[in-house]
Image (tube, rainbow, N blue to C red; front, side, top):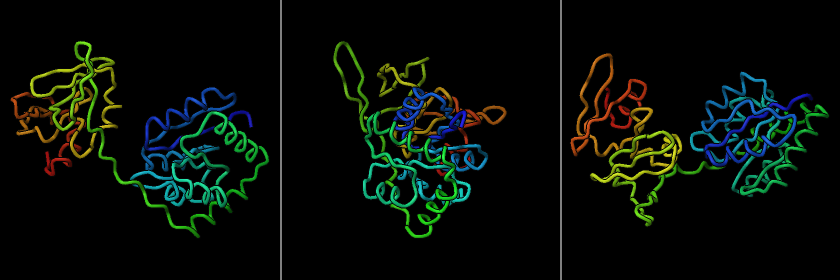
Length: 261
């Protein structure tokens, strides 16, 4: 094989980035996709071509085994299961995987798994892999998915040489400022070096909603929605703050509030 086309599927951003960083140091490897949403991953695998998938076993929404079922054992690429639960990892490895990685894993263990995958694919043992995957999805139930994470309870901010802990439930909204984010709490403002997409992934999705590419709001602070032109709206908070709601985020906010916008 001239180039190994690899996909990474894990709902945890740091876990995906860890695998991507390790793959970046490997010759003859091309990362063709990195997905936190298993539904998106299924579509991408079916579109192909993909040679190898590093697949998290426990994900909210769909587990790794459900991803295999949805794609189908015949179409599923060679798979290295990634898991934090040893009993699932061992069962998957014994029956269906090229290899498995038990979180947290070190660089050497990752290199062993990748080398094993390369060897499987070099020997073209595709039929054997298909048979193993089929035996897994037919004979074993899925492990119970992890409960939906509640999200961060506190965010550390530096103020005048002190590190303060801000309870996330007290946050009114967060606004992007380049590579920074400005946290607004009851009239006070704190600047932290964090990207919006990272904060969004770590905050409680039941409490916080992205309403604009540069704004995340605590939905419990919303008191009114004011329509503008062409589908845009203004979100009004308890303290009178007015924030723009973009059309691309309108439906998500509506679902979170239980209304049609």
